[in-house]
Image (cartoon, rainbow, N blue to C red; front, side, top):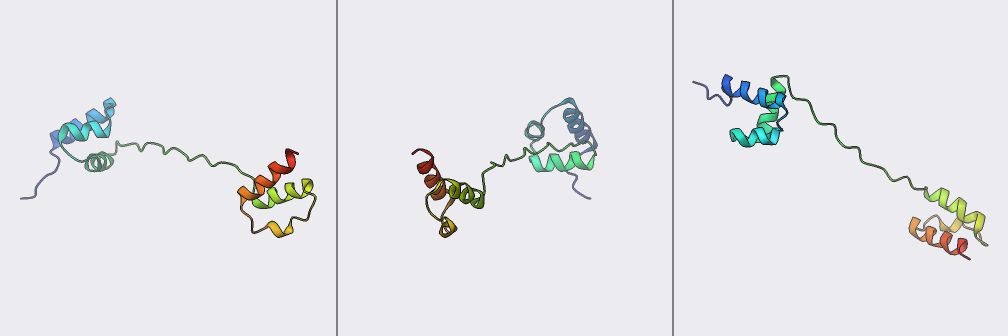
Amino acid sequence: MKNVNYTPEMTAKIVELYLHGDSVNDIASAIDKSVRSVRSKLVREGVYVAQPKAKARKVVEPTKKELLNHLETIAPFEVTGFMGATKEAINELISHFENQ
């Protein structure tokens, strides 16, 4: 005979708890199952709704080329040799010339 992980009664109970608003973590703790197991069962039952993932905020920074173009407008020297410089170094030069 096959070992049953979830009885029909247990399945009905976790579906009811989930639809009532209980978290998957709380349900898993209450029935002594893993969160992954409970989530999988809820998916198979067609009731689980995945939580939207928080989008990582990308910091918008100027590119190295944009920094060099800006530096070129304020520096009293040619900047073509600075392509190998870090953005941090270029920003320091820009700060130096803007704060004079």
